[in-house]
Image (cartoon, rainbow, N blue to C red; front, side):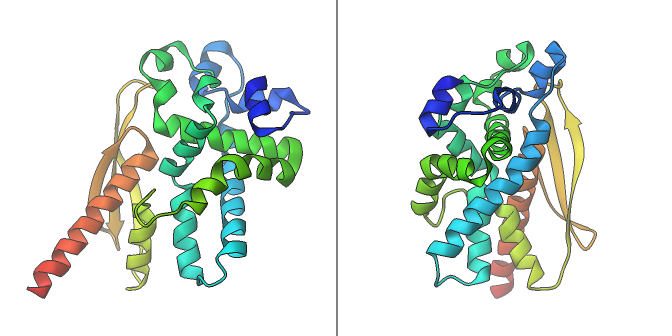
Length: 228
Protein backbone atom coordinates (compact mmCIF):
# COMPACT_ATOMS: atom_id res chain seq x y z
CA UNK A 1 0.00 0.00 0.00
CA UNK A 2 2.97 2.31 0.53
CA UNK A 3 3.69 1.95 -3.19
CA UNK A 4 0.23 3.31 -3.92
CA UNK A 5 0.84 6.29 -1.65
CA UNK A 6 4.20 6.93 -3.31
CA UNK A 7 2.60 6.75 -6.76
CA UNK A 8 0.35 9.68 -5.86
CA UNK A 9 2.80 11.48 -3.59
CA UNK A 10 0.47 11.27 -0.58
CA UNK A 11 0.70 9.77 2.88
CA UNK A 12 -2.38 8.77 4.87
CA UNK A 13 -2.59 10.21 8.35
CA UNK A 14 -5.03 7.38 9.10
CA UNK A 15 -3.70 4.23 7.36
CA UNK A 16 -6.85 2.41 8.44
CA UNK A 17 -8.86 4.45 5.95
CA UNK A 18 -6.67 3.27 3.10
CA UNK A 19 -6.92 -0.32 4.26
CA UNK A 20 -10.72 -0.10 4.41
CA UNK A 21 -10.87 1.51 0.98
CA UNK A 22 -9.11 -1.49 -0.50
CA UNK A 23 -11.17 -4.12 1.34
CA UNK A 24 -13.81 -5.75 -0.86
CA UNK A 25 -16.95 -7.08 0.81
CA UNK A 26 -15.91 -10.67 0.03
CA UNK A 27 -12.76 -10.25 2.14
CA UNK A 28 -14.63 -8.36 4.85
CA UNK A 29 -17.19 -11.16 5.14
CA UNK A 30 -14.51 -13.82 5.44
CA UNK A 31 -12.42 -11.92 8.00
CA UNK A 32 -15.08 -10.10 10.02
CA UNK A 33 -13.86 -6.64 9.09
CA UNK A 34 -15.30 -3.53 7.38
CA UNK A 35 -15.67 -3.34 3.60
CA UNK A 36 -15.16 -0.34 1.35
CA UNK A 37 -18.85 0.07 0.45
CA UNK A 38 -19.49 3.16 2.60
CA UNK A 39 -16.35 4.83 1.25
CA UNK A 40 -17.69 4.21 -2.28
CA UNK A 41 -20.60 6.48 -1.36
CA UNK A 42 -18.24 9.35 -0.53
CA UNK A 43 -15.99 8.68 -3.50
CA UNK A 44 -18.91 8.76 -5.92
CA UNK A 45 -19.70 12.34 -4.89
CA UNK A 46 -16.02 13.34 -4.88
CA UNK A 47 -15.31 12.18 -8.44
CA UNK A 48 -18.42 14.01 -9.66
CA UNK A 49 -17.18 17.24 -8.05
CA UNK A 50 -13.59 16.97 -9.30
CA UNK A 51 -14.56 16.29 -12.92
CA UNK A 52 -17.28 18.96 -12.89
CA UNK A 53 -14.86 21.52 -11.43
CA UNK A 54 -12.23 20.75 -14.06
CA UNK A 55 -14.70 20.93 -16.94
CA UNK A 56 -16.20 24.19 -15.68
CA UNK A 57 -12.78 25.83 -15.45
CA UNK A 58 -11.34 24.55 -18.72
CA UNK A 59 -14.28 24.35 -21.14
CA UNK A 60 -15.63 27.86 -20.92
CA UNK A 61 -17.40 27.66 -24.28
CA UNK A 62 -19.46 24.56 -23.43
CA UNK A 63 -23.04 25.00 -22.24
CA UNK A 64 -24.54 23.15 -19.29
CA UNK A 65 -25.89 20.26 -21.37
CA UNK A 66 -22.52 19.50 -22.94
CA UNK A 67 -20.76 19.79 -19.58
CA UNK A 68 -23.25 17.38 -17.99
CA UNK A 69 -22.84 14.85 -20.78
CA UNK A 70 -19.04 15.07 -20.68
CA UNK A 71 -18.93 14.71 -16.90
CA UNK A 72 -21.18 11.64 -17.04
CA UNK A 73 -18.82 10.04 -19.54
CA UNK A 74 -15.83 10.52 -17.24
CA UNK A 75 -17.43 9.26 -14.03
CA UNK A 76 -19.10 6.15 -15.45
CA UNK A 77 -17.92 2.65 -14.60
CA UNK A 78 -15.73 2.27 -17.69
CA UNK A 79 -13.88 5.51 -16.86
CA UNK A 80 -13.43 4.58 -13.20
CA UNK A 81 -12.00 1.25 -14.31
CA UNK A 82 -9.43 3.07 -16.45
CA UNK A 83 -8.42 5.27 -13.50
CA UNK A 84 -8.01 2.14 -11.36
CA UNK A 85 -5.84 0.51 -14.04
CA UNK A 86 -3.69 3.64 -14.35
CA UNK A 87 -2.60 3.34 -10.72
CA UNK A 88 -2.48 -0.51 -10.70
CA UNK A 89 -5.14 -0.57 -7.98
CA UNK A 90 -5.86 -4.26 -8.55
CA UNK A 91 -2.53 -5.14 -6.89
CA UNK A 92 -3.68 -3.71 -3.58
CA UNK A 93 -7.35 -4.76 -3.34
CA UNK A 94 -8.12 -7.35 -0.65
CA UNK A 95 -10.45 -10.06 -1.95
CA UNK A 96 -12.11 -13.06 -0.43
CA UNK A 97 -10.99 -16.52 -1.54
CA UNK A 98 -13.95 -17.10 -3.87
CA UNK A 99 -13.73 -13.66 -5.46
CA UNK A 100 -10.01 -14.13 -6.04
CA UNK A 101 -10.50 -17.51 -7.70
CA UNK A 102 -13.18 -16.24 -10.09
CA UNK A 103 -11.21 -13.29 -11.46
CA UNK A 104 -12.40 -10.50 -9.20
CA UNK A 105 -9.01 -8.81 -9.37
CA UNK A 106 -9.60 -7.93 -13.03
CA UNK A 107 -13.36 -7.36 -12.86
CA UNK A 108 -14.11 -3.81 -14.12
CA UNK A 109 -17.06 -3.16 -11.77
CA UNK A 110 -15.09 -4.24 -8.71
CA UNK A 111 -12.10 -2.07 -9.60
CA UNK A 112 -14.31 0.90 -10.45
CA UNK A 113 -15.93 0.65 -7.02
CA UNK A 114 -12.53 0.30 -5.36
CA UNK A 115 -11.29 3.47 -7.04
CA UNK A 116 -14.35 5.37 -5.78
CA UNK A 117 -13.69 4.03 -2.28
CA UNK A 118 -10.03 5.03 -2.52
CA UNK A 119 -11.01 8.58 -3.50
CA UNK A 120 -13.48 8.67 -0.63
CA UNK A 121 -10.73 7.64 1.79
CA UNK A 122 -8.35 10.26 0.39
CA UNK A 123 -11.00 12.95 0.84
CA UNK A 124 -11.70 12.00 4.45
CA UNK A 125 -8.00 11.84 5.25
CA UNK A 126 -6.60 14.80 3.32
CA UNK A 127 -9.53 16.82 1.98
CA UNK A 128 -9.78 18.11 -1.56
CA UNK A 129 -6.04 18.82 -1.76
CA UNK A 130 -5.40 15.11 -1.47
CA UNK A 131 -8.15 14.30 -3.93
CA UNK A 132 -6.68 16.65 -6.54
CA UNK A 133 -3.25 15.03 -6.08
CA UNK A 134 -4.88 11.76 -7.15
CA UNK A 135 -7.03 13.31 -9.88
CA UNK A 136 -4.13 15.21 -11.44
CA UNK A 137 -2.26 11.94 -11.82
CA UNK A 138 -4.88 9.59 -13.29
CA UNK A 139 -8.23 11.35 -13.84
CA UNK A 140 -7.54 14.72 -15.46
CA UNK A 141 -5.14 13.32 -18.10
CA UNK A 142 -7.91 11.03 -19.38
CA UNK A 143 -10.46 13.85 -19.31
CA UNK A 144 -8.06 15.98 -21.34
CA UNK A 145 -7.69 13.20 -23.92
CA UNK A 146 -11.47 13.14 -24.30
CA UNK A 147 -12.78 11.76 -27.58
CA UNK A 148 -16.28 11.44 -28.91
CA UNK A 149 -16.62 7.71 -28.37
CA UNK A 150 -14.75 6.88 -25.17
CA UNK A 151 -16.62 5.83 -22.03
CA UNK A 152 -20.02 6.11 -23.73
CA UNK A 153 -22.64 6.56 -21.00
CA UNK A 154 -25.78 5.11 -22.55
CA UNK A 155 -27.92 5.93 -19.51
CA UNK A 156 -27.11 9.63 -19.76
CA UNK A 157 -27.68 9.64 -23.50
CA UNK A 158 -31.07 7.99 -23.09
CA UNK A 159 -32.02 10.34 -20.26
CA UNK A 160 -31.14 13.37 -22.37
CA UNK A 161 -33.16 12.05 -25.30
CA UNK A 162 -36.23 11.18 -23.20
CA UNK A 163 -36.21 14.44 -21.23
CA UNK A 164 -36.62 16.38 -24.48
CA UNK A 165 -40.03 14.67 -24.82
CA UNK A 166 -40.86 15.19 -21.11
CA UNK A 167 -40.94 11.44 -20.49
CA UNK A 168 -39.78 9.60 -17.36
CA UNK A 169 -37.38 6.66 -17.09
CA UNK A 170 -37.13 3.95 -14.46
CA UNK A 171 -34.62 1.09 -14.18
CA UNK A 172 -35.48 -2.17 -12.43
CA UNK A 173 -33.34 -5.22 -11.72
CA UNK A 174 -35.66 -8.04 -12.80
CA UNK A 175 -33.33 -10.99 -12.31
CA UNK A 176 -30.28 -11.79 -10.20
CA UNK A 177 -28.45 -15.08 -10.50
CA UNK A 178 -25.17 -16.74 -9.62
CA UNK A 179 -23.19 -17.09 -6.38
CA UNK A 180 -22.41 -14.03 -4.26
CA UNK A 181 -18.90 -13.72 -5.67
CA UNK A 182 -20.07 -13.95 -9.30
CA UNK A 183 -23.48 -12.34 -9.66
CA UNK A 184 -25.25 -11.76 -12.96
CA UNK A 185 -27.99 -9.14 -13.27
CA UNK A 186 -30.78 -8.44 -15.74
CA UNK A 187 -32.16 -4.91 -15.88
CA UNK A 188 -35.12 -3.36 -17.67
CA UNK A 189 -35.62 0.30 -18.44
CA UNK A 190 -39.18 1.61 -18.54
CA UNK A 191 -40.42 4.78 -20.20
CA UNK A 192 -43.66 5.95 -18.59
CA UNK A 193 -44.21 2.39 -17.38
CA UNK A 194 -43.58 0.76 -20.78
CA UNK A 195 -40.58 -1.56 -21.26
CA UNK A 196 -38.12 0.18 -23.53
CA UNK A 197 -35.08 -2.09 -23.25
CA UNK A 198 -33.49 -4.98 -21.38
CA UNK A 199 -29.85 -5.77 -20.72
CA UNK A 200 -27.54 -7.99 -18.70
CA UNK A 201 -24.22 -7.63 -16.95
CA UNK A 202 -22.00 -8.72 -14.04
CA UNK A 203 -23.06 -5.66 -12.02
CA UNK A 204 -26.25 -3.67 -11.64
CA UNK A 205 -24.57 -0.66 -13.26
CA UNK A 206 -23.47 -2.62 -16.31
CA UNK A 207 -26.89 -4.27 -16.67
CA UNK A 208 -28.55 -0.83 -16.62
CA UNK A 209 -26.07 0.49 -19.19
CA UNK A 210 -26.83 -2.52 -21.39
CA UNK A 211 -30.59 -1.92 -21.05
CA UNK A 212 -30.12 1.75 -21.97
CA UNK A 213 -28.03 0.78 -25.01
CA UNK A 214 -30.79 -1.61 -26.15
CA UNK A 215 -33.37 1.16 -25.72
CA UNK A 216 -31.27 3.62 -27.73
CA UNK A 217 -30.87 1.06 -30.53
CA UNK A 218 -34.62 0.48 -30.56
CA UNK A 219 -35.40 4.19 -30.68
CA UNK A 220 -32.87 4.74 -33.46
CA UNK A 221 -34.38 1.89 -35.49
CA UNK A 222 -37.87 3.33 -34.99
CA UNK A 223 -36.72 6.73 -36.22
CA UNK A 224 -35.07 5.19 -39.31
CA UNK A 225 -38.15 3.14 -40.17
CA UNK A 226 -40.35 6.14 -39.56
CA UNK A 227 -38.20 8.19 -41.92
CA UNK A 228 -38.68 5.59 -44.61
